[in-house]
Picture 1 (cartoon, one colour):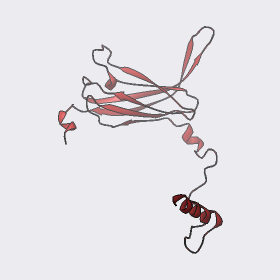
Picture 2 (cartoon, rainbow, N blue to C red):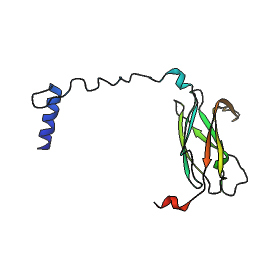
Picture 3 (cartoon, rainbow, N blue to C red):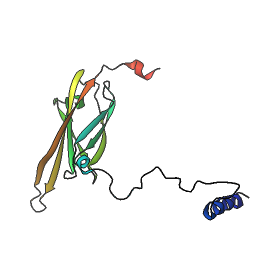
Length: 161
């Protein structure tokens, strides 16, 4: 019985509006058709970085969203907020692969031992080329970007509401 009802509904949609069920002729009148590339050229060359949440606590995980110019194929994101437990390095860099459009995302953990206060997250969009014979790689910096980040104190009460 269900298939008969479904076939009947499809038939009325295909054959046009009937007296019992009217379907608007142009349902997508207000929506622009997506044909090819609709992003302006100036936006494609723009570099941007977003770190969410902007005020994380110690022992949290932040999401990093990056956009680089299409000439770049990799992004290097570093900060003093990303330090690891037991490491003597105060500044840590993480790599981020980019899509063909220059978009990338990654999650990075904030250590429980990260220093409180204001930090800066720095991003370099780079073009990496490797010589296949010598296995030497060449890194060319395309653009840079920085955003502020504030680390708050860890509180166990954040898990109990």
